[in-house]
Amino acid sequence: MTNNVNPFSLYFDLANGNSEEKESSKRFLSNMKGMFNDETTLQQIVDEEDRLVYEFYELDLPKTEGNILFGTSIVYPGKVGDEYYMTKGHFHTILDTAEVYYCISGQGYLLMENPEGDWKAGEFKPGNAVYTPGRYAHRSINTGDEPLVTFFAFRADAGHDYGTIETKGFRKLMVERDGKPEIIDNPNWVND
Image 1 (cartoon, rainbow, N blue to C red):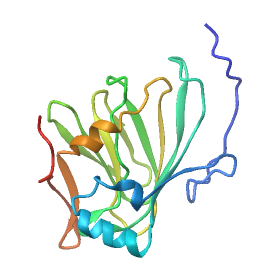
Image 2 (image 1 turned 135 degrees about the vertical axis):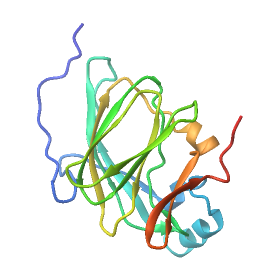
Image 3 (image 1 turned 60 degrees about the horizontal axis):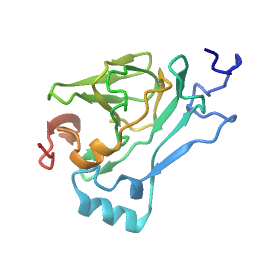
Image 4 (image 1 turned 180 degrees about the vertical axis):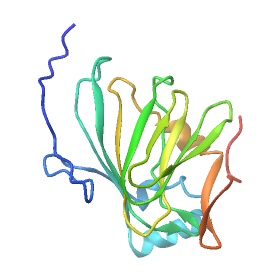
């Protein structure tokens, strides 16, 4: 089986994760409704200024088993109430799909959880790679004062399931307590 992809290279800036060769997908606070615990504060911030929370550069490759999608994710610093800026998070449609993230700059965590309730937070700091096993939803969280830039890779046919997270949320939240990140139970998590 051929996948009709020729060898290629793609440039990502090691300082900021940007690529001049591709357009990024952007997620603003208005795109994050239902993701943060404090919806009232979220709406107040959006009404003042709809800030950019994160953006990512991802390839457009055929969604076939033999290809690997990769790109960069940039999560900007900020908080909604005491909850740090984060990506929406997702499971893969092919649930057993693993993904790897490599931290280029910034600091934060990759929060991961599986349907059975196991969870883990992998630390992001420059040079750290975090492996997300299959069956784990995952979201990047910026706990620092500068953009959190990561490089990611996963199988191209894996797909993204954002709907489960949009409906149920994550079991855990990462919030600031006494100037430090702390993981707490999500009071709005939907257990069915």
